Image 1 (tube, rainbow, N blue to C red):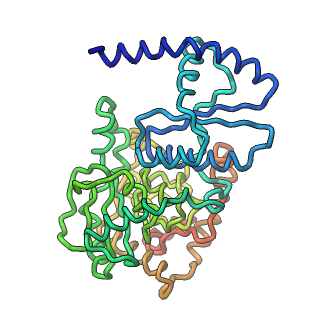
Image 2 (image 1 turned 45 degrees about the vertical axis):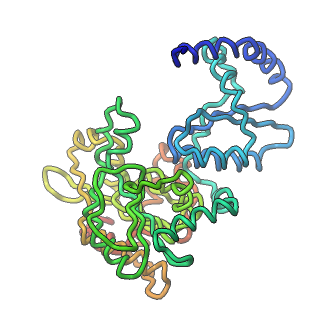
Image 3 (image 1 turned 90 degrees about the horizontal axis):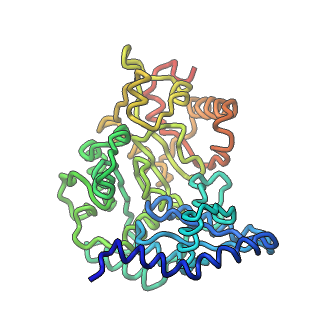
Length: 395
């Protein structure tokens, strides 16, 4: 039996006999036609999902004389989404050989594009088309999966995604992911909020492919998905796409709920400047304090210290602190009340001051030009989170 690595190289050589001449042909016709060939980022679910949706809008908005083709590396982060993409976009997987030889031969033809780099929906595209449709049999499969767990159609359910290190450590074991540790949270801190939702007769699905800890609550309305033996790639997508609310620490799969226009509660995340501003979302980031004084940073300091590595916070003399279990409970209760509509908390003066300072700060920062294009009309900070700040936070 041929070694898989040897077979892969042999397969590349075999395909070179048509791929290399095709590159020459493409180079010639690209001088006379508008042709783009785009590689979708399929290795991580957030990128795969958002890039494929943005590709859909690119096709709708392109000029009639422009041709755009796509491909993506396999295996992907989610096999079900691969099928969805293939039935909604012009995907031609044989293009991967053209990409390979374009790089290998150092041609660097400009018609090839690696990734759209459109993770931020600054133009409001998601409002135009809330996700690709599920087929009837896919909806039926997902509903039956839930019904077997005791759910009845029409009952509300929340997807809860609390980031820890296990997924990346398992998927990319050769990499050191500790630089992301400031983003992690402890599922135990969410227990009071989970219990409150369960008491409201809301189903809670703790999401994720794999996690370190199980949820230490036994309740018929609680599904600890990372520890389910009947996980399914369809369910990974469908649940986020159909939930009543997605509560997340802004870590990837929550973009499914974002694309499908489900309400979001983004909690215990950083940096604040990376907020999802184009969605119906309530926001409550982690606390960051000056290590030498213990004082929390002001809003402007939050925005000026939007680091993406744990080491950067350490070097800046900043301590990252998770919200407490009571903080999380209060914020979840506030968010759910706003969704129900009966006890909506009106926008306070603090809310108005927050957005005035935020928008003024990003407008004066050239590095953030275009980073926050659209602000959704229902976007808001948690009032509880705002009220927990010192008097000089908004100064």
